[in-house]
Length: 503
Image (cartoon, rainbow, N blue to C red):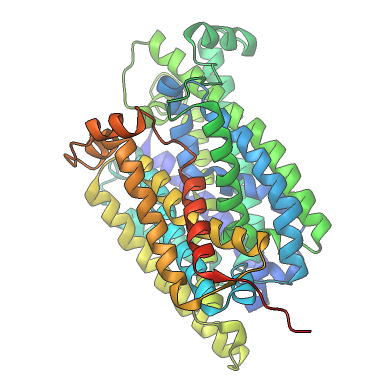
């Protein structure tokens, strides 16, 4: 597969994105950037959110994980459905009733400035780290198969890609992203289906026979019934539900698109239709993983899980078409998660930290501030990508999942406390609770799985005996975010008092 040919298709893809950005960004203003003028088509939003939810990490890591984790990831996907029900019928009505631009404004209305700033801070922190890790993973793949062969340094690749993302999000913001996400989701799903068909045919199989072979290998096992396992099905489903609530319903990037829809009913239709399609798409990714492992075994190929899909797709055995399809699908999976992240972080920082919507400055001055913030975060993204390159550990994705569970926990605790109680918080201690609770949960997680930290972070903790003694070998899985939210909720209750109603 010619690196020059792949490079031409990457450039052509970006030119299409820039054309869409130019068309949708005409006559845009701050309201267009933040919430798309409240005029987005719910079907486009729902379809585009699929790409945002999956990202390049899903495209590479979910198929790669089938070899060691079978179809256990589908347990989490089923949990997502429960979480999306809560988003559709609890959070969406709340956001529309309060007519929010930033969802963290709810925390200001309910608890005051400290809670508002804390919520925005934890969102920005989590999205910043998560999005740059995803960006690093995909740039690394593009670097290996395209840019190294053209003599282009990793730093130049990262810089140019970020500049291009900056160009097509600079003016239109959410208004542009609704359309680019739709385009990119189409590219990703088309690539997924084409790759499945091509690889199945290369093995002289059809869908049902391939599924039968995967079943014989044990790959299609969905439910894990080992209570102590981190992949136990109840842990995965409960964790999946709360991950969906926190990382979609309490996430400015995802909700920024939902509240850009004309009305609440359309926004609910968006969430429900999106959640059902997401189940099917995730199953296809797992099916692809099974096919890839069957193919690798038939050709006696051995490689790291994250290298499995790109190595096979770009191998000489296939025609150039599948390589081009893979690269386009990969970057289509990457950019909805990165362009949306940088736009939503800009929005949250401007609205929640700087209070731009409450500023008396002119529209022109507000736009100048917003553009400066947008550019600044692009620089931060670039620095973070270089940091991940310095770490140079592909297992860092495991760390990012843990990091998200830690940083979204305070958001889960704050929102649930506001919705489920009518108590008033002591402003002085909100930040302390939101920091202490995640640290306590992190400590418990270390006690339950010290070998994870020894392997991934190269820390010699020597805690295995403590873990087995105190927790009888129990390992925390996807329920980490729920435990974090409960700790935060309990801490907030401790610093709260009853609301006194004066007649």
